Length: 286
Figure 1 (tube, rainbow, N blue to C red):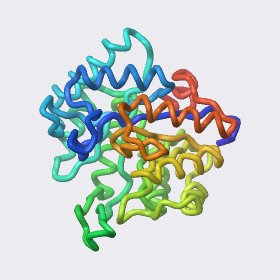
Figure 2 (figure 1 turned 90 degrees about the vertical axis):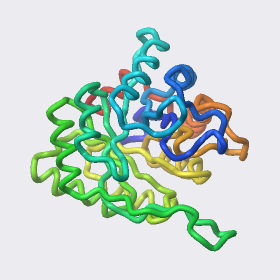
Figure 3 (figure 1 turned 30 degrees about the vertical axis):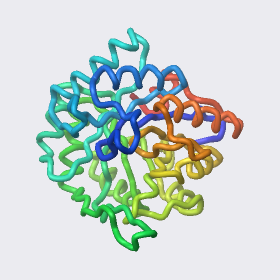
Figure 4 (figure 1 turned 120 degrees about the horizontal axis):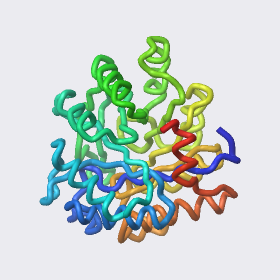
């Protein structure tokens, strides 16, 4: 990748963990997802990462909820193009269930977590973990998801929470279950994963196979520092209410559109520009 490449701005529209008690702007219903999608696209976002929810806000892995959200977004955009990206990350949800909504709805892209890890949130003030679990993503599940994506013509987005996850790409390439062009995202800021520093981002990027498109996913308020680092290294960025609820000045975002607008401005301030949907499709091989 090059600093001359346009920046793909992705927006993770809702996530599955945060709720409206934490941020009133998180969408729950299909119509709320659609309104947020409109704001995202208007501000320069070209890919929307979707975790499905039921209208009461609880996470869902059902085909009908993914369908209702996606159809509402498409209707709101009225034929305007956007890259649809579904999450496949889950704890305790069978792989077959996750493949079912991919098979039925066939998004352009599907996120694929590249390794197992401790996944936690730590409170320095309490001197305790306020959330902790084991995020299991064994190779047999990764391969099963990849084979389904290959069959369905869905481009995988490889979410890597540590350098070892980046290294997991090599055997999959050698097996032939994975083929270029790759789309790799460095996920930073999760306790249990790689610490969120610019130096660590550069180390992760150095391990990504040559020719891959890559970006950064910063979790929490470190998002903006990591986004700036990625932009100066030639990468793309993801923002959105799944990852971070706050603007750089500490103000809570009133919409995903506000986060996308700041990411676009940051790209422009570093001398780069946001990719169009057509450019993003070409870069990703979608």
